[in-house]
Length: 239
Image (cartoon, rainbow, N blue to C red; front, side, top):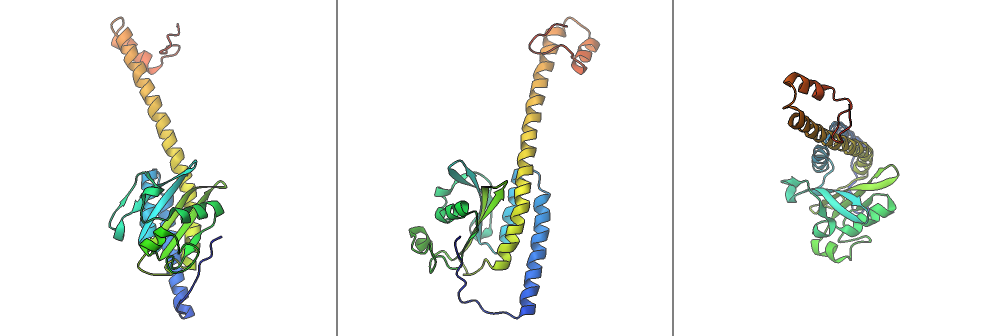
């Protein structure tokens, strides 16, 4: 597991620190409720990006999907948190995100936390880390049924040590709810596709009945067939 180097932290009074932790936990609790209420995947990803920006201290963030041997950012924030987009983008084409950090988090199934990435730690000599002068970085895997299918990636180049132990623990708890919500969204969308397919089949059947039999029978008989067409299908079963 990648170890975060906690250097140069200012010690705060215990009461003040605890108050801040409690406020963060309350914020993440509310965020979890928002995530659990999202049904469609696009809605879920939108809520999650907002949470990572507003409550976790990220300047930029992304939700990453692992598919076979390829990783995609399915949602990501823009610079300065001004906007975000939801579409599949290969990780290698995102210049602000370090794919090597994501791979370590995915393989270890543990968070990778970097307090000042370009100045210290195992990734400081990587060309992209050096070029961007990356500072606070966090990549947290979302474990779904024992597998890592999604990850959350957060970065903040304005400050070092942004992703505190308290925030990481809150994000771990949130990731459990996110895993459940992702599974529910995928199931919902799968059912929607099946319903749409079935509806399309019914529409084709109804058109067939009206076209082939409408000229030989009254509207009442044709409608009765549409309401209860036992033994009648596009395959041409006999009644």
